[in-house]
Image 1: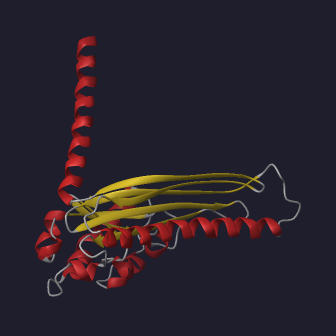
Image 2: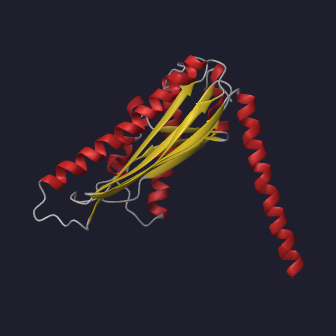
Image 3: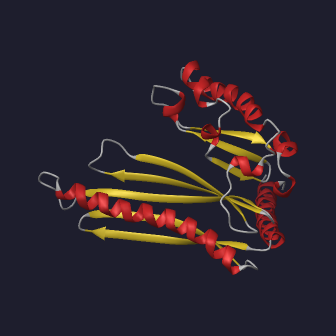
Length: 251
C-alpha cells in the first residue's frame, strides 16, 4: 500500500501545481495580476489584534484604472481598521475597572478573489469585528466587482441586460435553495421573511461574487429569519446566467 500512497501524494502535488499555473495563466490573459498584501498589528494597551489582507491590482496597462480600483478596496479596508481602533479606544475609556491584561478586541479581514477576466475582476471582503465590550462579534460581508477597462464599480443592473428579466430569474432560483439550506441545517423556514428577502428587487441582490463557474449571493440570517441562524450563500451556475449578461461582461 505504501507505493500507492506515495503516488497519490505525488498526484495531489501535481494537481496543486497545475492549479497554480492555471491561476497565473488566467491573470496573464486578463492583462493584470493581483497581489495580496498583509496588514498585521498587535497593540499592548489596550490589547488588541488586527490581521487584514489587502488585494491590489498590479501590472495593469492603464495605471489610472489600476489606481482607481485599488483606492476603493484600500479605502474600505483601511476605514474598517481605523473605525476598529476608535471603537476600542472609546469602549475602554468607559469600561469600569478595565483589566490591563484582558484582550479588548480583534479584527480579522479576509479577502478572496473570485473572478479575474479581461473586463471584470470580482472580490470578496469578509470581516470579523470583535469588541470585547460589545454583546457579540460582528460578521460583515462585502463584495466588489469592477470593470477593469475603466475602473467603475459594477452593480447587477450594469452587467445584466435590462430586458432579460434577470431579477425574476434570480429570485425564482435562489428562494427555494435558501429554504433547502435552512431545512438541511435543521432550522425553520420563515416563508414570509424569505419571500420578502428574495423579491425581484435590486436591493435584495447587492452582495454578490463572480467566479469562473458561478455567481454567488449573500443573505445575512436576519433578513431571512427571525431566529439566529448561519448566514447563507447561494451559488447560481454560470450556465444559468450567461444568456442574460451583456456581451461585454460575459466571461
